[in-house]
Image (cartoon, rainbow, N blue to C red):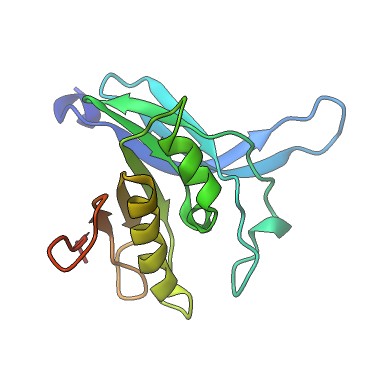
Amino acid sequence: LLIHQELDCYICYGTIGTIHRTNENNDEYTIRQNVIDNTGNLVCSYDKIHLCNYGDCAETRFFTPGNKPCAFQCHGFKIGVIICADMRSPSLTRVLAGKPYTCDVILQPAAFSRDISFRTWKSFRETRAVENSVYFVAVNYAGDYYGNTSIVGPWVDEGHEPEVMG
């Protein structure tokens, strides 16, 4: 058995997507998250819509933005996928939380470094969870320069703090 079958889990992984243009000579590249289910089927392939272009981040110089949201069913939950700086746009999370997607959970793989913008990551993930009444699962690289992977519930106050895992 493969690991996702043995553990009965889904796997989300990042990669570079390629858009082949038939009427042009140049391919375009996207920042992509793929999700495979517990049987090995691809159930979601999302190309990052909101590329960042501030600070040390220069994604717009190398990548083409995606153009449609992506969501999938997992063990009774509807999960929407966004990538890193997508969270700065409230409209994408709002679309995933509303019809026709009606997501319960927003999954946000990220590479948020501990630079000047790191504190905003916490604010944005809490805001997106509360304003859309969804769970927000923010998964970041591990290590001293990254960290703060967390699960934020749809209600945040002194009695309902996000779960931070490092």
